[in-house]
Image (cartoon, rainbow, N blue to C red; front, side):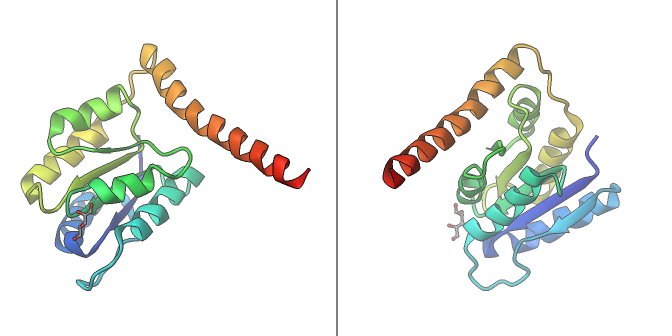
Length: 162
Ligand code: RB5
């Protein structure tokens, strides 16, 4: 059961971020806000990266990201090793992203979902456990891609030095 969540947003999602943050705090979660608190234009990759780093390092148990669509901020988060961030615009995919994909970050769009739907998505996501078993094998395969890329990068680096 997760207790400490990190939340990130850009300018398009400021109002929804505040509502969801209050909602989660009301449910007893500790919520670390690394998004923008200003309506001024703010690049979503910064919030996505900040939040993803906290999840990858274990400083937060899991993370929730909100931008206009949920797309850009999830793309940024998924560049961080160890992150599986899924964009979910309804509760079914939110549940499956936990059950089958062991998502450790959830993203959605403030211009896509309203507050009530966002709460349902968040509730479903937080309440669902990873099933493991055959799904663990597939998730491991996804994560192996990261290791392959690291090895290839290290190999190239060595080539340059020698
Ligand atoms: C900002 O206008 C918008 O591009 C951003 O919030 C997000 O939807 C990007 O994926």
